[in-house]
Amino acid sequence: MFLQIKLTIPNCTCLKDPQETKLGVLIMQNSIELIDEIGFEAFTFKKLAQKINSTEASVYRYFENKHQLLMFLYAWYWGKIEYQIHVETLHIEDTEEKLFKAIKMLIEKKNSNDIYAFVDELKLKRIIESEGIKSILNKKVDDVNKNGAFDNYKNLVAKLSGWLQEIIPNYAFSKMLITTIIEGAHIQHFFADHLPRLTDKQQDKDNVESFFIDFLKLLISQNINYGQSN
Amino acid sequence: MFLQIKLTIPNCTCLKDPQETKLGVLIMQNSIELIDEIGFEAFTFKKLAQKINSTEASVYRYFENKHQLLMFLYAWYWGKIEYQIHVETLHIEDTEEKLFKAIKMLIEKKNSNDIYAFVDELKLKRIIESEGIKSILNKKVDDVNKNGAFDNYKNLVAKLSGWLQEIIPNYAFSKMLITTIIEGAHIQHFFADHLPRLTDKQQDKDNVESFFIDFLKLLISQNINYGQSN
DNA sequence: CATAAAATGATAGTTTTACTATTGTATACA
DNA sequence: TGTATACAATAGTAAAACTATCATTTTATG
Image (cartoon, rainbow over the protein chains, first blue to last red):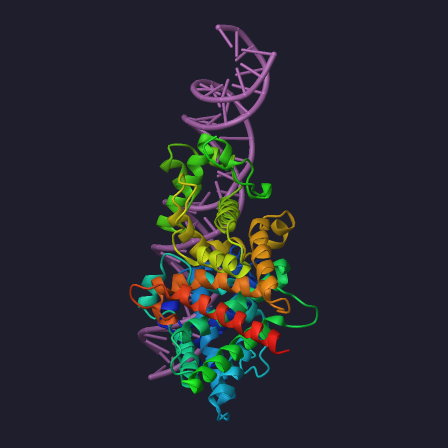
């Protein structure tokens, strides 16, 4: 209706797909704006409804509560970035090169090739970095997980760890490595902005990318050498 | 009063130090119990007060709100584990050995040498793993950080990254590596328990420790070799 | 042991959040 | 033209997140 490409979203992350309607798209756009501005804790459906000249009751037709909305944005983000990675690595032959391209896209703050201009991608990425993990870290995780809430994220991790397996077939921790890089990059970006003494921030440079790329290169070179010497 | 050793806690993480009084200790013990049981979102001062046969108003004399209580537990945990690491590495000469000992203590689920039996250390560790990061990831982080709320965590990171600097003097990312291991271990443990497809869980084995220890060993060997060959 | 100070309990109240229910109106679509 | 769907408007409830006051108990101290 409003999007070039509509993403598949686990249906337990919403009561009604907001991508389908005008109000739904307004909810998506403005919840991203508002959560980025005031933070998830201070965010309420009442404030959101006021922002878009609608009512609480209308928002509740799309989402059971704000936590479900966050899970939706989370799933939507991972669906989107997986698609972007798919497109931007299609032409690459070498698996290692594919993997590095994908990792860089995940770490960099702004994706260059944004196909979903109807939401502010920079703000969404900032939300995923600082609020995203809250959609997982709670007591209801097992219930929603059963219903597939995190499938988009899992698919991406499966794809990238599959590539890593191709590069280092005998490596036992490929999923841990991928999730450590993804989650680590989020936390390190947050630390760099707010708690620089917990990180190695340098001016005018995104150390986070250098750190994780170096990390991955070291691992690959070591394991390939190891494989050769056996 | 009740503790063998009283920990220094940033005073912005409480209104009155709960370590000093009987009720305060009850609040510490039972908030850990209750948060572990029902999760931080469902946790309220009313429920806590009922559990200890006290009143909401009394709890509010120690903490402004539940978020401040979480920050207190966070600071207390890092103070405690830094002390434990201090004690258990005192007798070790070799810096590399010290570092590995510390990392293992941070990653393992239950610390063997528990000097603070008055709180359930296993439950506290589980809270730090699954709720701890929420004390950082919010819009008030800059304010409380100015007042030293996270100093205990920072001190620990400074200590370990200092050791790493001794081992690999020219390594540029020592703090990032330490925080990546600490935060990574928390998330990986949570994933192993709830979202195993995001990790490389194996039965009857804590892969998380193997993963990070292997990685650290690789990094050190690589950099030492590199230093030698130059 | 007496007494002041501190800590806690008991009670009551306010504001905000997090919802639910109902009814009327506009829009789409068939 | 009728019918379903979507949304707005309004109202209401229960719980959460506090704040205030005053009585009572505990503790420190001289």
